[in-house]
Amino acid sequence: MIRAMVVDDEKLVRKGFISVIDWASFGIVIAQEAADGRAALELLEKQEVDLLFTDLTMPGMDGFELLAQVRTRYPRMKSVVLTCHHEFDYVQEAMRLGAIDYIVKTVLDMDNVDDVMNRIVDRVRWEASSRAAYAPGAGADRDRFTSGEALAFVPLDADADPAELLRLPFAQRHAMHELAGGIRMAQLAPPGWTPELKRELEGLPAARWRTALVAGLEDRPLADVKRALGERLARHLFYAPEPADGRPAEIPYEALAKARPDADAGLDAAFDGWLAVKWALGAGEWDAFERALTDLRPAPERLDAFARALEQEWAGVLLDAEALRRLNADRAPRQAWAPWRDWFRLFADLAQRRMLELSLSREVMASLIQAVRYMRRHAGDKINQADVALHINMSRSYFSQCFTRFAGQSFGETLRGMRIERAKTLLLASDAPVYEIASLAGFEDDKYFSRVFKERVGLLPTEYRSQRGKTVGSR
Image: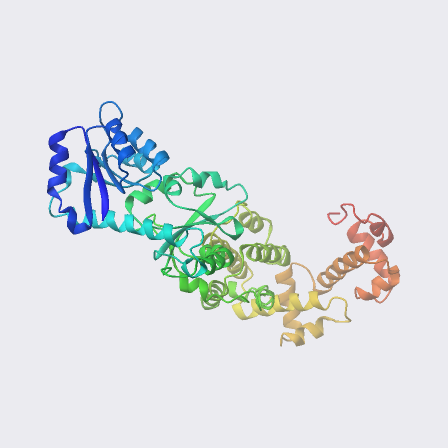
């Protein structure tokens, strides 16, 4: 049986509360009753109880002070607040002091008493079973979840201070486990997610923490859950949609447990293919690109690297200065997939706008993009305009006409620029002689190479190399 005490300064209210409930049917016996906090503590010195029901506004020692004293002296005792107030401030303060639930005396009646008491008894029994499961010496076979849900708190940046979590009333009532990546997790006691819990968590800075409700955990080994959440929750949560009602993102544990450990395998090839930006030129291609990204779930840093590669690859071709300004207008970290999707959508819109400005069809635009990528890969080879036109299956004359419009300069000028960029990289990466660098960069004559390099870079190749380690790339 659960031994309970009722504390209320109004005798009629106290007696009425005791009489209105069939305590035995819930496995509870009223072992003590008191008129104020001080009298309650004196009785508890003689006979400890399991469950305390206390009013908040009492003369002398009020319910808040009583809760604070009980929390220190009798940490295993569970407390329930009796109040006439429905204001959340009262309840929140009581929860911060360790109360597990509250009862509004003015609305308690026979229609809702069963629900209220069953909820309280479930919580008391859950707490007792949790203590037994995680008590020292309980054994690995009992190191399991006793509830079906857990709240997990995922830091969104390096400034996320765990102390912000520990100040929450929730954290003061639940044991918090620290996982990999700074994630904190606590089992969620019955009745699970409630409006009161939602209000408790509103003080957590959304810019530094994101909360997840992980379900399907009952009887799972704690070690397995901690490992799965530490390794996979942050990325899974990154792609999870944000619920509209303010609830945490709900994630089934099975989805984490079944996540492939080799999820990043093949991403390099996928991102390299996406640099050809075919996904940006049509609705069907965009849909396939979006599905592929959400299926593969690349890490946020991979998305950031890909975005930077897109800007570098297509600056001056698909993207003019205004387009680059728009893409870089918001440099704040993107903490979820949704803002990244918006960024890629903007890139696609800008690419399509460029296609319309050039009056090129989607097929021709994709072919010209393919041509530029082919030229960059083979800039060090002895390629010419005919080779590139053949590679994209376009006549040389039509290719020349379209390419000049697309790149803003002739094929020859574009290829020489690519070769100079290749030469700059080679000069800084090796000590090979200039004539060898010229050949590796696609120039047949090293004197011609030096002249073109000086015209474009402002330095001779040897001068450029001598400034290795200095800022020369911007000249």
